Image 1 (cartoon, rainbow, N blue to C red):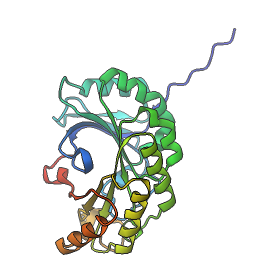
Image 2: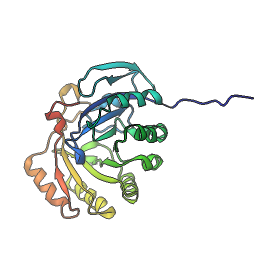
Image 3: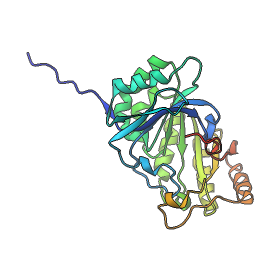
Image 4: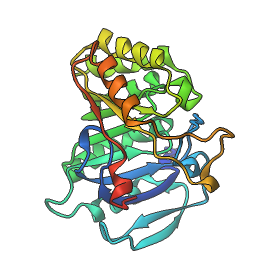
Length: 265
């Protein structure tokens, strides 16, 4: 009798750590962050360009919040990642688990096996942070998600354009009764016509979906990879854009990256 060949699923990670969420609907809450390697987008404002490719190692926080990182090799087997998350999950400390990156949906096959197990072990809700441009991969893991933060990429700011994919992605989240919100990075170069198009896109799915306008955090010169610097918008610009979008959707909030102010990861 030939033994069945079983392959342990693996994921390419950047880091696992505990921190305060600094963006969107979950701002201020404590989360276990699982940061996946690899991204298929090249947004001009990206502050995580180190996640675009897969490193040979990843770093794992031993004690939640203490930044006592250990270095481990990539890729990481599923049972090992479960152990690391369980180690982070001290009683009553965390509100949820954040899947971030990079683009976590590039690991959708891994997540279909990992997520039901990590939910059973921790009892924590699962929050997906995503570029919102891969609806097919989202469909693979949607039964295991509780909330989704979808980045809607403005071409004038990010250099990326995925309107059709964003529309499909948001509709799928809404139809699946997920707690979904939309985050839009804005800069001095934001085209108001794109904000109006974004508002219409959201309103066509549901005007009750919350939109978060996030003024870009300017990158240090050493971190910039675009020849054109991405600069934060003025307060007048942000006020005007919020008013514009509120003509189409009910809830439009302006929140910067608060974790940068708190010196969190």
